[in-house]
Image (cartoon, rainbow over all chains, first blue to last red; front, side):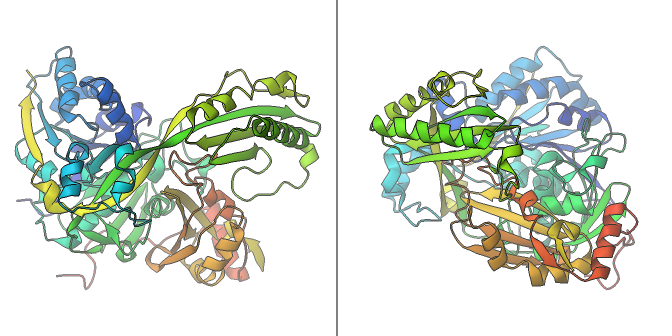
Length: 459
Length: 135
C-alpha cells in the first residue's frame, strides 16, 4: 500500500478544449508531478464530435490532445508522469491510433502503454433502451426522450473512476476515455495510488472536491479572480496541482516558478463555480458534501483542504444527450459617438421592421447593446457620452431559410441605415445549428456492463 | 453603513443549463453574517430582475463563508440555444458586486484590510494532524 505521509501530485493541464496549450507542458516540465489531468469535454462537445464522426469514421476526438501528447511523450517516460484524459470523445480508439502513429515520429526510451475506455456511448443503443422501458426523461421538464427521438445527435453516460482504475491497474501510462466525469480524471489517480475502497465515501468525496478544483485549469490558480486580479502574473500562469495524502486531505498549489496564484480566494471561487446544491454534489462514485470542506490558507500559494465528508453513490448515471433544436445566427454593427446608443437603437428598429415585412418567422429575436449594458445589470449614467455602442442581434428558429435570410439583412444597414457605422469587416454572419442539451438519468447497470478497457503498447 | 457588496465580498458565476449559479464569498469570515443577512434570494432575484425569469435558490456554505445562488431561467435557454452575449453568465458575479448592503464599520475595515493585504482573509492552520480528528 502506501507509506505514511506519502504525497500524490495530480496536475491540471487543460480545463476545456481550447484552453492554453502551453499549460500542460509547463506542468510536466517545470516541477515534479505524478499525473496530468486533461479535460476536453464541455456539454456540447460530444455532439460536435459525433457529427465529425458521422462524416469520417476516424474522427470524433480532440485532435489537439494527440499533438500535445506526442510532444510530451519523452518527458512522460523520463519523469514518470501518467496522463488521464477524456480527449477520446466519441472515438477513443481513433484517438489512440492517431497518437500511436504520431509517437512513431518522437520515440521514447521505452514504449508507452496507452489505454482506451469505451462503452459510455449510448446513441446506437437508444432504441433498444427505450424499448426496454428506459424513458430517459428530461431532468428539468420531465418529458420522455421519445418527444425528440429523431433529432438526437449524441447520448453519452457520465462514467466514473471504475474504468480508469482498471486501466491504471493494467499499467497504462496514458488513459483515453470518452465521457468520463471531469472530476474522475483527478480522483481516479488518487484512488489508484492510495488503494481507496469503492465504498470509502469520505475519501472519494475529498477526491471529488480535488477534481472540482482541478477541472477548470487556471480558474483555481489566479485566472478569472475578483481578488487582486491586477496583482497576478497571468502571462505564464501555473495551473493548479493537487498534492494529496492517503486520508483524502490535500493541498492545492502550483509550480513555484510559474505565475498564477493559489490562495483562499482563488480556490473558493473555483469551489463555488458551476455549483448546484453544494450539500449534494452527485458523482458516479459518491455524493460529496461541500459544506464539510475545511479550508486553510497556508500562504506561499498553498491552500489546504481537509475534513471532507461524503455519502453513497446513487443507482443512476447521468446521461448527456444533445439534439437538434433549430438554427440561429448573430450579427453585429458598431455605432460611434455622438448619440451612439440612439443610432444603434434606430438600426435595430429598422432591422426588425424589415424582417417583419419579409414575413420571416423566428422563435426568438434578441437585441443587445454592447457597451451600454449588455452584461449583467449595470445601467449607463450618461448614454450620450459613450464613444461607441455595438448593436448585436440574434435570431433562432426551426426554419433554416429564415435564419439565412436574416444574415443578409445586416450588411445593408451599412449604407441604408443610421450614420457612423463600422465593425462589419467580419462579413456575413454564419448560420449555426442549435444543439440543445437533454440531461437524463439511467440505471448504472445498463452502462457498466458495456464498458471495456484495453491497453496497447506504442511500438 | 451602506456599501457595495464588493467592499465585503468577491464572487464567481457559471452556468448549469439555463440556470446561472452565482457564488458570493466573504472577504473575511467576519463578513459572512452580513452576507447571510443582506444577500437574500429575494434581493438577488430583484437585482437580476431583467435577466432572471425563474426563481432564485440560496444555499449556505458557512464553512467557506460563502453563499451559492441558483438563478433559474436566466440564460436565455442556456448552451447553444441562447442568443445572449453572456450565455454562460460569466459576468453575473461582477454584476452583483454592485448590490448595496448594510455592513458594520468594523467589518468593512477588516475587509479593506484583506484587500490591502494587511489582514489574512482566511485562517492559517498548522499543517500537521488535527486535534480530535483521529478516527
